[in-house]
Amino acid sequence: MKKKILAMVLSLAMCCSMTACGSANKDTATSDGASSDKKAASKNDNGSDLAYIQDKGTLIVGITDFEPMDYQKGSDEWIGFDADMANAFAKSLGVKAEFVEIDWDNKVLELDAKSIDCVWNGMTLTDEVTSSMACTNAYCNNAQVAIVKAADKDKYSTVESMKDLNFAVEAGSAGEKELSKLGYNYTSVKAQADALMEVSAGTSDAAVIDSLMAAAMVGEGTGYEKLTYTASFNSEEYGVGFRKGSDMADKLNDFFAESYKDGSMKKTAEKYGVQAALIEQ
Image (cartoon, rainbow, N blue to C red; front, side, top):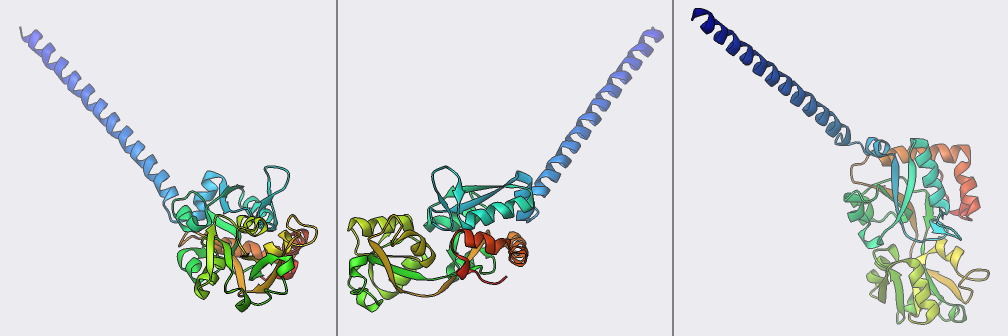
């Protein structure tokens, strides 16, 4: 009888021991898993946009169709001064640039939602832009200019002479801001290219677009030979925008400085005819 009782005690002790070991192993596994998850979260939530972009391996660039900065010509590949510079910058980070067409009026929302990583598309450094994004130094000069039919060039040679016209302008653009400030009549369209089509079709009297785009898109030898640009509404500068608080703006400033110094930035600008607009870095 004593032997049976002893055997039962030993059996119970072994069961308790095995249960304790199992519990310890489970706790250890849970602890290790939580630790791994914590490290992964820390890697993505450490406040560094640079680390986030390098970790996922892509720099997602928000753009619109805007020759000579970002456009497609005969293929799905995006080219242009901004597109080429974005590709070179991404390569320097060890990642690939991906271009996504966005609604220009929603560019800040796209950034904050992480649908894109930056806005790099001949973006004017307005007060609204610089207060809602982490922006680079200016890299190109620009202006907002009026587009009219070539036959009307002499008739509409000043901003004042256009006060009774109906304009087409890209929603959320610097051009829209200028027209709104003046109280001129306008229709908002999705892109600057759409504004040109409105004037060409006669559904709008004039458009306001960036001078760099105007130089590339209208006049002799272009797809809009019967259009021309006249008066300037302002003078402005282009920059690249990242999420508010991002460390990427400083990183790109360094890249701009190096590219300007070694001549590659100027070479790219000459390829697309924007070298006169470059700002020294």
